[in-house]
Image (cartoon, rainbow, N blue to C red; front, side, top):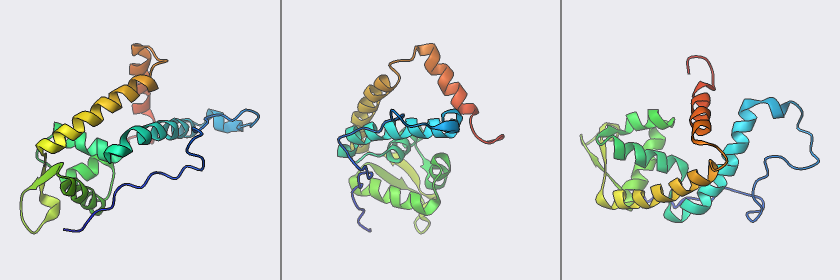
Length: 167
């Protein structure tokens, strides 16, 4: 089985200075009205905090999402998981290889067709994910602390509407 590399931290020019969504004195023009730009600014700020809290656990946003989906859908195939998180199947094989090397996930299924394996969390994976979920819950509380519960539900509903029609 090929060895997987530990996650590389995302490149940040000055890791001590957090991303600023709006830099004082800079005019953003129409960018202030572009939904995708606003979402991306929020994503950068959120991912920086996520990385600080979860990279020590070897957890990135795609790894966290994948582990949660496996936990909640035992027996999910690699192909199904790839479709759910939006990665190509070959990328999913590498991700599951990493999970397997860490002892977090096991593959059950047909020998000879790695895409047909059914995925299950191991007890080690479940314990590791529990720690990650606790940290993400704390981050989520911080990220949404200025929203009321109703505003948070509304934001999530509105984000479901963003994107190309039919997406």
